[in-house]
Length: 465
Image (tube, rainbow, N blue to C red; front, side, top):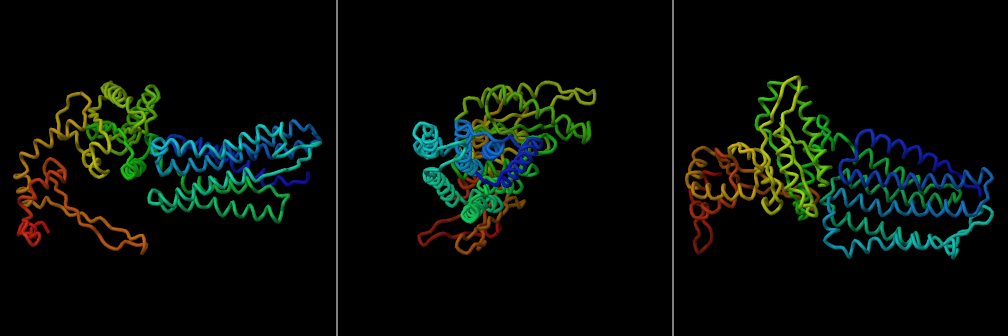
């Protein structure tokens, strides 16, 4: 056995450093980070067992049972890295719910690794895959693991291509780096069969993904150690695009400005950290498996997936009661004037923009009662009120210029550039953003007149322009 373990040793060093830095940076607070840690662990174990096999042989060990166990563990962990990598891609796209909606596909994806697992577990009795004699390995076939790994690679490529709009450019480049690295490892293995480069290529790919994708400044808020606003926007945007049903607990501290002026920057941040720690404790206590975000200026968001919706109401009530407790900062007792609202997406809101509009100032539209607000009920009350006042609202909008035009760029996949823009009309009244469908109820009667030969836009339309 004259195999070179230099690449495996380098892999172990690289992966230990990446694992330690991810733990130190607390990069384990969302599902994609947890799966990424799993990818690091499986690759690290594969490299360790491959090193152990060579080191033990060099130390004079010739026990075939020991070598069989180590070789089996190496193969199982090395081949496990491919399906874990596929799960990591799914987690970045935020499409776990689709796996739940199609259990047959989920089970089918387990079959290739199950085949490898079974073949290598029964190998000591059958000798189909490999055998050892005085520490020397005889490889009978490796086709099974190559075919099964190829299935996962093909599934990953197909999945990324089909859902490419859910990935950012830097994510696509980092994820795609695994393919040329694997191909390069195969070429090196053909010309230098004694060099163990298979695990090393995976380690380099993980290093690239850790540097490009798993960046704490993109994920973690430095003050609260919760997830950042940018990640919340990305997650919710993907949820609406994927049709993923989520429940959102919106928390707005109405007297945040007064607290900030009283305590100052540092002590306000300390208060926010106390609230964040309590939110994390409640998440663990209720086993909600929720994602918790800090947006800005005393605004928190908690999202719960559809498979855990039974936890959303108890968690919301617990959060509301917790925020009524006094928090002592700088020997001052602070009671945040917090509004807690529960919303369902996309049942209550059609897109992320409307959710954001509502969430930004819903606490300014209703008196404080100390109760949990249900967005569905609040929207119905608001719809009834606005419907009766819509004529006056539109008149005010035309007089004051409250009808705003927003331009949404349209991207051409064929030309790979933005080719045009869609103009969207938004009405911002004294009470805030007015939902489009309420405006259209009146606008269809007042702002657009329909004739037999099409639509004619009267003077009102030009005033809007």
